[in-house]
Image 1 (cartoon, rainbow, N blue to C red):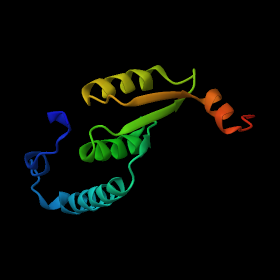
Image 2: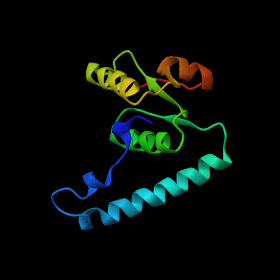
Image 3: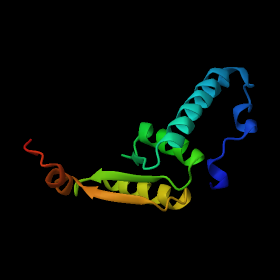
Length: 117
């Protein structure tokens, strides 16, 4: 895992002291424990990632446990350029090697969905 992904105690304890982060740290540890248990029981886990804030947190936690975890993004040709630029930056900086793009219309054909809007 790249050094910049590791949360250091100095960050948690900067300026305002460790107490305001205590509950957040406990939730983080509980989530990591849950994910470690889940990933140890299931070998073919793939993380869906939209590159929004929630997906990024899940991806970050999963990569801390398994740096080789596979992920994918269902995308469209209309995806905002900022999202594409951000995605490429994250893939490079976090050294994510197992990532796949799935176009929405291809996914619809794979699962036989009616994609009428």
